[in-house]
Length: 391
Image 1 (cartoon, rainbow, N blue to C red):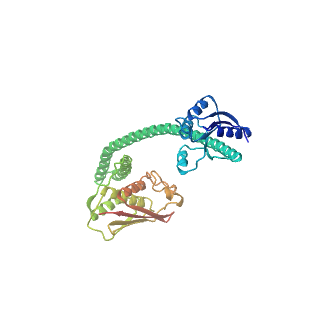
Image 2 (tube, rainbow, N blue to C red):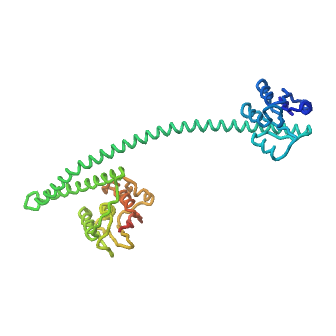
Image 3 (cartoon, one colour):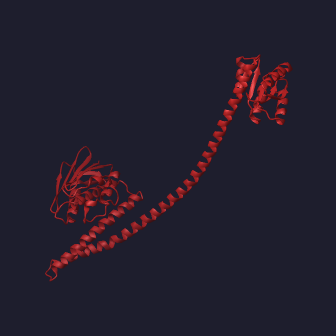
């Protein structure tokens, strides 16, 4: 049993005296006895107490309940109510003041001491909990402030990165556009040289050979610039679906003719066109990018004089296509990176390429709402399966 400083608030002097003796018998120190709420508040101004024993019915303007409300607000001291009444109305009144305990008169000393010990224990635990809550709130505030500052720095960094990316995209687009015009001129000149070389000329073979090299290099550089311009649009979120009515036969013919024009390893494209409507509605530029890149890759990575199969058909408002080659294939360990920008498999050897083709295919299919899958085995070839919804 520990010693407590106790204030008794009781307007019945006999009950107050009996309570004092009972408490002092258990080594508690009585700081004072007040018979009104006003007097109790005055005593609390001048004295420190551990607990208040409060009668509900007091003389004066403040009853025990009102006095307890003031004590809770100003001093945060545990209060034990004393009352001869245990009716529901009285209990409802005292519940709102969060008392530490409620003792019915007459009480025995053992019960009273137990109630006081429990009240003190409850109060201390509540204060410990409140202290922990306060510390936690302070840590949360501090952490929130730190996160806010970090977030501000992150936003600044992201904004700076966005500005740099925009500047980079503008530079790339401007430079790429700038190269397009002279490349067209070089290509035209190379084609003219080949025409001139057809006439009788002592250097006919050399002129034709070098003109072909120039034309091939220009086409490769032009394709690279086209890819860079494409990603410039994609990075600026300017890649949009622009559907048009298009003739399927003319589209497929132009596609195959373009790919055939760039073949150097004598690969043959064997096309098989299934049932197709005369016209479809889709984005011709995006469709062209998908199939031109897939076919060009299939040709490029095929063996000398190999065959690339291009099967395309129409089913349930979808274009379904397969591009099959018997070329070098893609290592299993690298297949998960196949559509990454600038990725090239380790087994491509000296075959030229930018590593942008398949990432362009994936970007275009995302806009078209299509899908691409593939199967591949090293030295046995690769098959791409493409499905694209059209109207």
